[in-house]
Length: 297
Ligand code: KIV
Image 1 (cartoon, rainbow, N blue to C red):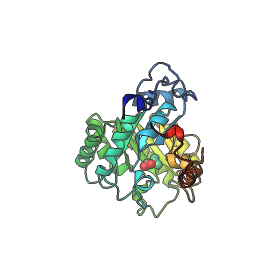
Image 2: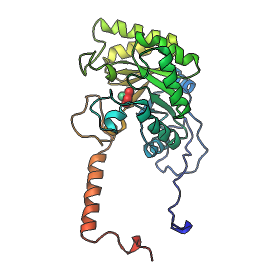
Image 3: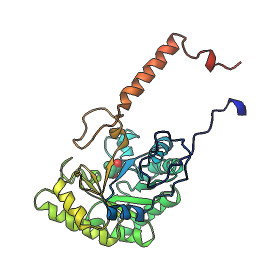
């Protein structure tokens, strides 16, 4: 391909961090944004500003969400079901997630990129948890890691934080323990609410910078959020958390099938993509594509 045949390069991310969602025109030239750091999230909690986190597993969604002003991108182990075709998150490995983390860190300029530690990569010991976290930081370029579990993973959180790596915790329904929790169900109802609060406080003491609360009753999440000085990020945990997270394919309507009650769809990408693919195939069959304008002479 000659230089003149090449398409224009993609526009750089330029919207300022803290100015809210980026302008509708992502190529609008404004000052470069600063990288979001964990203290910014804490400051947002203190100011009562609620923030969004989305999953991302590739360069282009990372770029789009970054330019849209999403301050935190999570390369979740949910890549297992949403990218790699596994039934659950249990089989996905560090080696499978690392290239996705690299793609997201390359694609984003401003967002804090959090790498999820997959099942089996941190539970054995604090040493194992630290070694896995170091791989995500060194080889993936992540800015923080996330792991699932309450009181039982406090030693792991403490060891990772002691090495200077920011840790996001994840309690309530924790998909990696789905079998142990008796299936996909709300956690922390009744007396279990007190355990959840105790677990959250222990994780904060161990040095976690934020805690994901998944499928927790709204009043329990509100209590946890009020008792902690670090931000809570809800997924199926009501409106009182400091932040909210969704899996991007759920949020954008790419995935089909029944959705959990907490999912809100903001687009219908599945229909859009399906219509585009159908139209492309029809054009090819009818010799309507490529046209004269797509043909080199
Ligand atoms: O892996 C993931 O996507 C997650 C979010 C649902 C919080 O852990």
